[in-house]
Image (cartoon, rainbow, N blue to C red; front, side, top):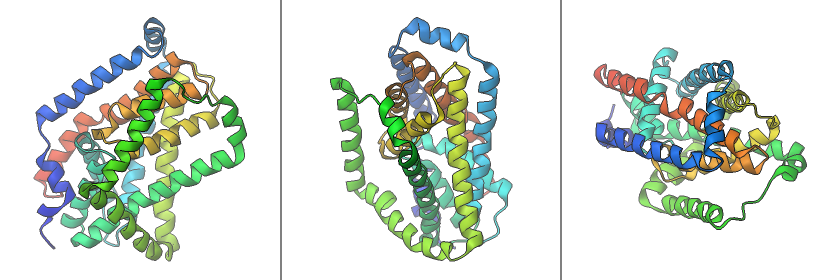
Length: 320
């Protein structure tokens, strides 16, 4: 087993400080306050007060289920026998590490450390396993997005309102430019371009085994559709009448934006993208803001504290 101190996960752990957590929370509070100004502040606040809590508790349960699906992905990409419970703990710890890195790099880094320290994989194989897991998610997102547009593209297009305000266009252009700039950097080439190439090579051997391919892509479909269900439940909690297909379109588009967003954890960018796409596809601004903020609270902010505790526990037990 080689020394994991040169891994992405180790470098991310070195930048984990309590002040960074408070900084992220502070930025999140500002983002949440600004987004409540998107619609009428009073109506948005009334949406929160009149929420149907049963839907939100259901969304919370589904959010917890996503760690099971992610753990199945962690297990599916390695030949070494990995305990599913331990893999779920790694997934929860990775959610905390995402606070300190953009585009899900926190989870990738923790996964890489886990493969190298607990699954006895060398650096090349560990990075390839992480890349394969990531690539499977990209493939699944692409399949579901293309399927949505192929069968229901006209219905979605009829509801779509193209952004025309200068600040909306500026945000879109900024996200695209930032994503392109990130990919062109040394870090971008290391965590995006090279892993994608390794993943394509690794995918050939995985697809050759129906059992491995079924486990990996089945878990990836489960993870994606469960996250989509969380968003649907959040919208239902505030009385949304938006059909499933526009919601799915908003979810997949925002997932793409979040992947290229340069901000740690997609803070700010992902919230704006959800509100923008949901309102563009027909949701009222107040419901879109309330649902988007609730979705991000359940899937990103709420797991921070248990994720931090779990990450420290994994370190103490020498799991990562």
